[in-house]
Image (cartoon, rainbow, N blue to C red; front, top):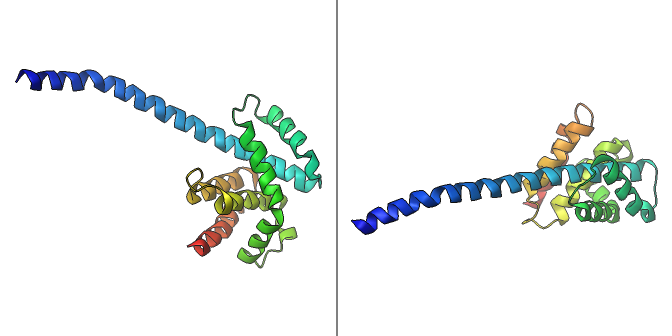
Length: 171
């Protein structure tokens, strides 16, 4: 009986520590998600500028640093922004080919610059990112949220349709 009482008391005493540990871990996870969303917003801005102004790849590093300092000073995930921006630019022709196949009625040059670059970003994460780091549904949902924030009235639906079609093809 004494051992049982000690076990129960021990469980209750350790509960608050476990609870606060769980809250801390949850808080860190939410903070990481918010940082990644902000990072993707900056990546989208970089891609927009690169596409709109026809910037050469050699200017990407400077563009990333400028946009981060202007729109997200103190961002803790600068390497993610740099890497993702460069990788999307490097895979642009492949990504555009996938967009053309998924939305044949929309020539790539007729898609708005914002939507086009959100699709490139979402497709890159959907097709080339590590699934453990960026699950497919996260890549799609993040792109839809960017489209709703930065795109036109129907951008979210359009991005959802294109990425959803590609996701179905992946099986």
